[in-house]
Length: 395
Image (cartoon, rainbow, N blue to C red):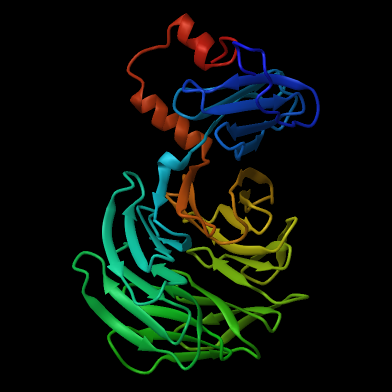
């Protein structure tokens, strides 16, 4: 409402009775929380939903903290804190971001855009470390474990590998067909997903690649630290291979085309995206979780500790799941459908590319945020601050 005239300016729907409603300190965001535990945050300038989370139990009260925290409390689930990142924490390009990738330690993130530039960023400071100009926009990206090497492909037959620090071109790979995905395994080993039905592992120093064949187009590849190659294909399978010997170790059959694949660093968990579902499998190929979505899943990533799975979907959401029990931990809305996703900041956050000019970094790990906040807190909160920033003084 406009205070001076009492005029209704906008209306935001929230299913069920509203337990709490609060504006951010700068009046740019509105948070509303339902008694059921659902919390939604909208940007007032355009009415766009920028965050959604579930308290997991009946909600008594909720608040917005001064730095984007969503704080909720209820009689059964205690106090929960989420960190909500806005565009101020995004990696910005002038045009749509097409792909993202992250180093194994999550300290560096790569983005590519329709502006035909590929950038490498520091995940914590959001500073640009390197900026590469290309003839065509890159649609597939990979960073090596340390973030010192960057691989990119526009989706045609070419893939390039650069040294991030110097900007020097390390290798130019000519593929027999279009390239659907890229993945590093160590400093000199790069896997490519080929639309000719063949995944390949290249030594970027030279030599012929090793080949791993499917019956149809290979859409994605992933490499573990112990030399296991996971591949996804439109032939309806995901497969696991011994990267060194080329032996096929496992075939996981799906009802439809498999669009994306991920593997935990130790090779003990494999994730796939096929149609409206992401699935998790153990090393023996046994399905351990089936994670339904309301639209096709376009990208997946497994955290460096193998405990969380991130998915991005054409319904306009990115989600983080517990790999152990399949529980959805957080759901994050974005403006466009589809895209790719990667874990960064040592697994505390995810970065999403969804064909818009910003690739937002969303912090979702509550325990990591609380630990970080504790390190920064130099004194106890006053009673007034507790009432303002916590929930009815609870802390």
